[in-house]
Length: 270
Ligand SMILES: [Mg+2]
Image (tube, rainbow, N blue to C red; front, side, top):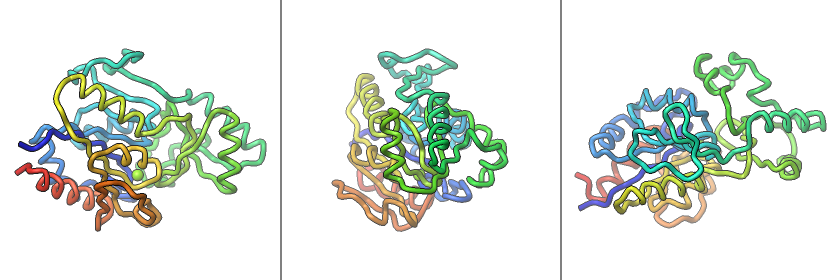
């Protein structure tokens, strides 16, 4: 009998192709996962509203990790126990670990006055976000509805920025398109919380994590089965040493789909 699995996946550059946001290459694998009723937890720098949009397209309705672990969202009908300290809102139990967006915006503006060349989503129109990210304007609007992190374009000395942010209780992660200014939370910590809830619900399972960028490393390092999706200038080019690590041959959704189907075969699922 194959072990139960719990899948944690990034979206941009991982399940979704980097520029087109297509998941065509993963459709077969997604279908198999749905059939096997394996939970698929999206863990991304995207906002709650964007994830809801993608969950609908992907046909999944599992808990998810928004804004790099700033918020953990558990649908109230998911049969998971509500985590301690969670807020009951909009049909979810929400556990927030992030710094409020308004605070982050104030700090970004302050740093800009001090000469840091930062430009965040809060400074941009939906049209501009759409252009930079190759999203539609409707999706860009969802991306602007932020709660815990600010994606920024940045030119300059990253180390100096890191020091200035740290003095103000913040840090940043590098994602596929932007740097993400935020509090000290990450996808790995959020993954740990959800693993705990699934364990409380009962049953043993193994975790799979898929990602392509530095902000995915805390999640990949926790996983029993870590999978790095190949990408130019991604972490596949200087992969860390992690046990059982797979690096896909192909980029984006095709790499994702093949890696998942291969893992399922290897673990004895049909
Ligand atoms: Mg990514």
